[in-house]
Image 1 (spheres, rainbow, N blue to C red):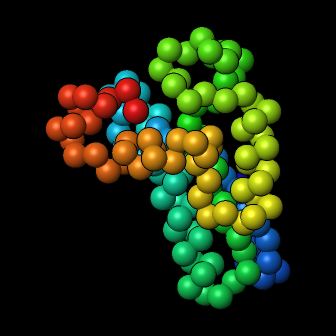
Image 2: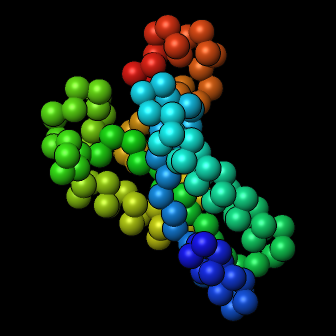
Length: 136
């Protein structure tokens, strides 16, 4: 609801930059936490829809979707999450996020080193994903 208030404000002034945070979990329905994955997928789709609305209506509002993957946070210190093959620190993630915002990137996979893994998570055929790559 608050995002709609901000988008309305930006639309009225015909400028702004909205930044939202989703997750690489939203790229595919994960068996380990489908509710979380579904919520993040909804955020990604919402952000894309708002971006498309702004573009199609020639409104100068930038929309950036920050898509974090493995970032070492308080409940998962760096190096302690066995599933986090490409984990980075919060400081590194912050630097990448700031750069994405400054560059007005549409969607920023964080860390940027996992772009290929994110692509595979989204587009691998179900057979391969479910049998060999569900760790993505």
